[in-house]
Image (cartoon, rainbow, N blue to C red; front, top):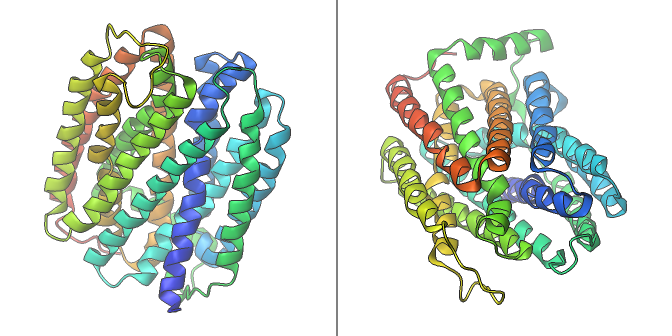
Length: 411
């Protein structure tokens, strides 16, 4: 097998494993409410236990990872989650899940920064970079989809206190081991990711200096706003379906899988569309499309009458329409990430990737907590209507970002 192809397959598998682990938070939030009588606002902190470690670990380690070794960093991350998942079938309290998502957060910081930095090593130009970035993010959403389906198979709708669903972590532990072994036996040339004769302190200061660049500042704002929107929907969709649409819990979790499937379709499609259409028009069209679906689907969620034999074959129209916004949201994140990374020299990709992960994590936590609190104090419709505010701000940020990105950043 061609070594570059082997590296790409390894990156896909690593991302797939963490897609399931990271985005299980929506399912876990629903299940801890049922198992341990946790309130929505209390359950929403799981997003923080996941995202804040991602932010801090990325900020502290991103500039150092090329010196630690990109491959070694990914192996450490996979080893950590393997051990954590092996413990979860024995969980009998809420704090187990806090520790689990803390470990997942730290591990994903190691994985995502190194994956983003590695893409620059195995692609030849901006076009190939954008295409591969969209593809790997699309595969990430396949992991989210299958993860939701996997969890739904272990959920007992008739017994809210059942903990049989925790057995899914044996499967996740096995997947982590498989990903570890595949990466361990794959060779990766990391020489271009390292800047010769620089100290860790100099690398860290160089990362901080990136934040001062106008293009990077606007980009950071765009990433923060997008992930705030994305995580609001991904995390709270299962709860929205169970409480507002009043479908069974397993069906709510499956709706999260449908949303993830829509994201996958959107990202894989973007990989082809971006070869022919300028990224700016794709992103603007996607933001407007997502906003239109919010305005279309939420009014349909009011005054529903759900029968006891509800299924995907006899559900109201809104059950099918709501997840389709994933198609429009999907291309935004990988596209703007690719634009900024392609504007920087390869030795700065690790530092820039760290900043991407930091502000993605902060945006995700903020979105989930805001949505959870609005959900609890008002209702699900209000919570998701509020997503139109960050969508509007994101649209403005993208216009500014387009103007600044026309010039390459000088290292």
